[in-house]
Length: 252
Ligand code: NAI
Image (cartoon, rainbow, N blue to C red; front, top):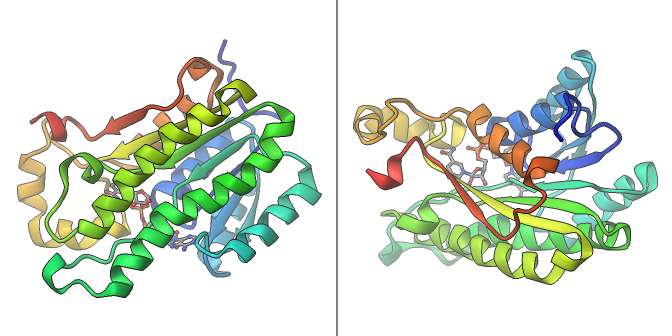
């Protein structure tokens, strides 16, 4: 049964949580009682202010910094989590970047960095989190994929490949750890109103809106609610799945 404070006593780490979708997920889990580690790549005020905002609202949170694509930095971040709490109940692999460009002229580094952060980062963090979750025989992991994993997307061969890879990674990992009490799922947001989509909104906002059946862009909270559900006891029998959150865009 879902209680008002679903995650009381639990520890969560949300990557890429200094703004946008990750910040909304961090706030949501904290509002439901979790101690939340608010990760971002480099030390910055935005991540610290997400954490202090959570504390001011009566929650518990701390900013932690590591480039998710850097194994050593991730190791140091998890060691801090381990020594402070000795447990990790929820990992949300949300950090993501775009480096759009047509494939014919795509630079090697733009291909590689997008794969390294969006897909490699989830692998590095998940692998490390399992060392805490497997002995506890409990854990929930949510990976932030994208509807571009299903649809492709002009100028996003790198991003679409990474996000599709993340879906396959979700299923394979879910299979490996299901008997350890660990569930692994993915969310596939559509067009969510954040910094990442600001340019598209500026140049083609009306056209995008026309294609969204519910008639509005998504908000970070639209995604956070589904992530919260996937991490909750209500989703205890759900693993290896991808949940599209797009206001009907992919069915239109
Ligand atoms: P955003 O650009 O507003 O935020 C991304 C966050 O990730 C920032 O805090 C950034 O500093 C952090 N980050 C970037 N590289 C990092 C790294 N190497 N290590 C740690 N943190 C890093 O993006 P938004 O829109 O909030 O996206 C969050 C996730 O949702 C991403 O994975 C994105 O691909 C995915 N997504 C977003 C959609 C949208 O419409 N905004 C649609 C579908 C998926």
